[in-house]
Amino acid sequence: MNSFRHRHTVLSALAVLITAAGCSSADDSASTAVPSPDAKVTELCRNLDEALPAKVDGESRDDPEPASELTAGWGGVAIILRCGVERPPKMADPKVANGNDADAVPGGVNGVDWLMETGDDDVQRFTTANREAYVEIEVADGRDSTGVLIDLAPALKKAIPEGIAF
Image (cartoon, rainbow, N blue to C red; front, side, top):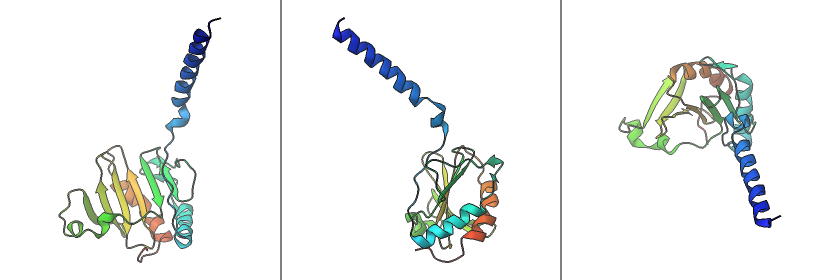
């Protein structure tokens, strides 16, 4: 048997196997980076994880990988929450506070203050303000974010006290 032909057959079979594995249903789950806050913020985030609702804006809870008490999700990649993130640079930008930034707007929903940022990928990113931990929520798929913020407000108010995050 020609060793070149044998090697070619093995490599072709391997390529098919890798391609099939890459298309498996395991890749349908969302993934997100897990924040690494200090111990105090981690405890607040654990409290938030326990207080989070099973459904947000009609979507069932479907946490991203890797599993962590610092992250949560609903509807696959539709709604992703990360607790203990760093303060977004735009939160201290005077242009945002003065309403002069088209991509970032401060506001509040049901007693929770937010910085809303819109990225190039049409994902809306909301980060809590005036709380002892920064919590980021990404809302994808062009969905109206109002229901998301309304549904998450009670858990955030319960678990993350008002104050200044460091």
